[in-house]
Structures are given as C-alpha cells and as structure tokens.
Image (cartoon, rainbow, N blue to C red; front, side):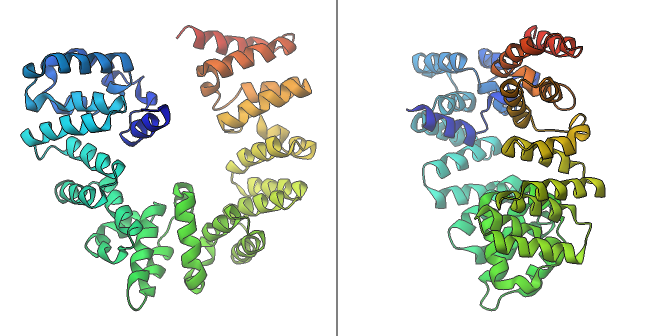
Length: 395
C-alpha cells in the first residue's frame, strides 16, 4: 500500500506521531499480550506509532492465532490499520466486535473504517448506535456530516437539540443547523437567525474549514438580511478565500460601519488590502487592530511581513514582534529571510521569545538555526539561542 494511503488511514484513526510523547500511550504496552483483553488500555492512538512493534504484533498473531481470544483482538486490529492494511484490520476488528458488540472504541474505529471503505450507510448506522448510548459530540459530527453531504439535511431533525448549543462555537454545527433550516419546504428563518445571533463569531471563524466557509457564503447569498453585522466577517472570509475581493471588502466595511472597533473585521480587511496590492494599508489596518486591543493582529503582521518582505511592515511592528505569539512556521520563514538579508535583528526576533519551542524540537529547523547562528555569533543574544539548541539536542 502506498505511503499516501497509509498516511490517510493513520490520520483517520488518529494515529499521529504527535501522541508519541504521551507516557500513558507508550507502544511498549503492545509487548504485554496478557493485557490485550483490557481494551480501554489501548484506546490512546500513541500506542500504535511504532511501526516495528506493530509489525511484530502482527507477525506473532499470524503465527499463533489460536492463542488470541476474540476479546483480545482490538490491539491486533489497530496494528493492522496502523500499517495500512485496511482489509485485514477490518477482518480482525469484526472478530473482536463479535465478542464485544457494544465496545465503544471499537465501534468508533469500525465506523471510521466503513467511511474510508465508502460504505457510508453502514457507517451511519454504526455512528447512530454509538451516539444513542454516549451522546459523543465527535460522533454526532460524523452523523451530521454524512447526512449533510448526502443531501439529507432534513434528517438532522432528531439531533437539532444537541446541534443548537454546539453551533455557538463550532462552525460545522452552525452549518448543520442552517442546512437543516434551509431543507424545509418553507425555510426556517427563525432557526438561521437564532444560530447567527447566538454565535461566538471568533470561535466559529477559528473552527471554520474552507468547506464550512463555502457553506456559510451560500447561506449568506440567499439569507443576507438575517446576518447581524458582527457575523459578516465569516462570509467575508469565505469570499476572500475565493478571491471575490469586492464582496469581501463590502462585508468587512459593513461590519466596521456597525462597530468601528471590530478587530476581526479589521484583520480580515487587512488581508484583502494586501491581496489587492496595498501592503501599507494592510499594515496600518493591522496596527489599528492591535491598538484597539487585539494582540493577535501582530501575528498577522508577522505573516504579512513574510509574505510581502515589506520594510514598512517590519519597521511599523518591530517593537511588537519582539514579544508576539508568532506562529512557528512564520518564525522559520523569518530565519530564512534573516539568512538571506544577513539581518541579526530578524534572526534573533525569530529565534527568541514566545512560542519558539517547536523550532528547536524539529531537527531540521534546529540545524538551520544553528547554521544561520554562525553568521551572528558575536551578538550578545547568540548564547541564548545556542542554549536552546543544546537543550533540545540532549532530549
């Protein structure tokens, strides 16, 4: 099976190396075969991040199947899934479920595997079974997504009481609520209005994906009169993502006309100004948002600097960059810019301060920092960077 397909399967089942540092989810647990029947011990995804241990479990199982009771097969199934063998993982998981038909972790994996295999209706039934006993909101999202994508939004009715409170902060659930409202013969404008008025706009915007944003702009296109001004930043972001600059600008302007201190609208409008060629206006807009009290605007400005290379942006935010929560990826780009421009100031702002730990934990990035550090080794700040490099090399 190709590496891309394996990575998709691992992502679906949450088998990410990011969990590997969790002491409660050590792959070493797989060496304790006597614990396999205690399924709850094998729920953490980090248990299955070591390919060699997974393969050894599979080899032992295939050589000694008779020694594995059906109620001890869940870890084995997960080892198969982790190596990308979906058919064999499904076979072993089904054997486990025959012995433990109500085990929730196993049912969740079963539902996910059915989705991956394209058996959507069967997956839906599995998710419904889980939700009926757990009211798990992640499972509810899977149910809603299947119905939404299958053009069956009207079938969301039984879940509406659970969807409504979740739609306050979660963009997907807000989308489900409005999709249900639009599925009625006579659109349920009251539900759309209720969803929008109760919305935590920043939380919804943060949780939005391109797909949910597309859905929002579709709702806006037919129900724009129901959108309070403070919610306009959501369809505006969707319009900007699709390069519809003028509609996006009009929506941001409308939000700011209602509330001149709406920093989400300021920051969104700054993006549009940058993308339409006015970097200085974008920088000024972000600085206005910062002065209004939104410190996240400085992180946006760092990204603007990396994208534009504008000295105007750098000079305007130099003081703020020194203490800002700049994203690690942007810091890496700043290191590269510092190397090219031979700028010690850019380099040390990138490598020191808040949120720099991920840079030093990544071997390649740490090596890059060490290489560029040689150019600026006489700077008094060099010792601090060297200390961070050395500390992470010892781990």
